[in-house]
Image (tube, rainbow, N blue to C red):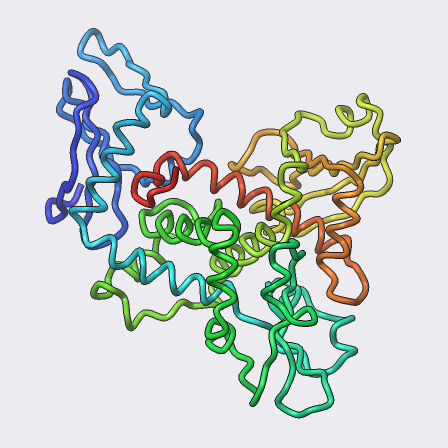
Length: 378
């Protein structure tokens, strides 16, 4: 452990264990302090994301180990992080970073030809807004939402969009309309709280929804607070992946309760035994379901259900066995339409969207127990 760092928060769990937060002008680290042996071990906060983990330390008697579940340690960890957020220069960075993320996630893609809507690239489909400039009048168009509209969203839009004049079609122009704040007020769990959680989790050293972003975040911490001069690198692959997962989450928000993710030693056998019929098998490259490529089999059930079984093509530390995503066929058919702003649907893209949306939702749920006191979530 670096002596130049500082322990900014510390709590005793019992006579054998204390937990501390250490920092050195970067994302914080958790120190596990074995008081009986006067030994310290530093770990990153991303290790805490799997709440079923156990922390083991050697006891004072004959080298016996003492185990603590993360659920058991959760109250102490929440107190640690809450105290750290007050003591460290955290809140200014949090609010500044939240605003930066929000602007990044709501960048509209510009479309100038009607035929382009039918042939949008994956990058352009991975956006929540389309700046539709396909009208007859030069410099005029509309910001069109690229996500399903609730009935209570209808008053926010005229003829399905927000007018653009004088070629003011950039993200700053979109924010000036006030629509982003109005959406956040109508549904904070969809539009704003997840972005706050992203910002807090990233600054504290949690994963970028399974991606390692340690050096990226430490660069932010090296800036004076708040990081006014720091500019998010939109080309950073980790940020692009996180960006796309949040957009998938926001677009398919209403379908998330109907999407099940589970793990299986043999997805083909499990789904076959459950009455699913195999339809086709395709290969997905790394980055869609995890850090390796996957062989993905589509299944359908006569009861109107659908599933995809995902077999990793190489060893991965992210999960054991194989993945199964299951959902009603109607959810999949709706998702195909929601991912296509007027053109041809894309099976590959929609499966990636649904998997990414579920991945983001699970990551969000894993972080909420730790971060809700800092962010004021109920």
